[in-house]
Length: 178
Image (cartoon, rainbow, N blue to C red; front, side):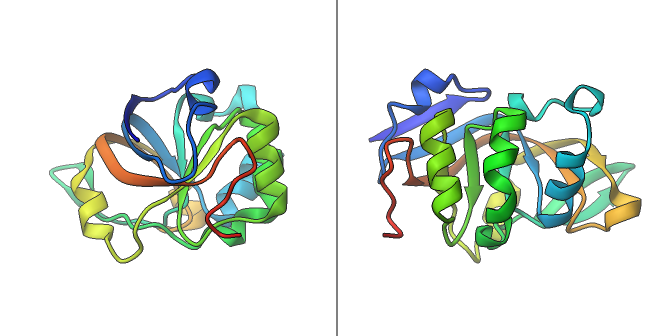
């Protein structure tokens, strides 16, 4: 099945998804790699300058450039998600994330968290960073750029019809990686 969602998406809708479904998301997504996960888990969620629970999480270290004083995504392909396995269950619990976008799959801890909290891990095609960047309409904010550098910073992207995202791990314990 194919679904088109505006984020945030209710857990009820997410729980209706199954491995193999295709989704497209419109709204805000945020990038977070290893260092961003680490920082965000240490911070009080009420003191963050943005609300991750209202967005989809994208494992991505984008290539960005500034044009006329505004950031623009040049390439925004997914990074290998397995590196975030040690964080993701705690991250989902703390921030209520229910859509994760990445590549390569995740492990047992994330699989259990997807079931417990009602989430999906979706796969975006590796090597298609320019295609992903074309779906980024705006970059309203960036956090920790000076501290972490471009790929590790948290970028907030406003996207339209971002996808196709293949549901690779669902909230029912199914995974294409098994």
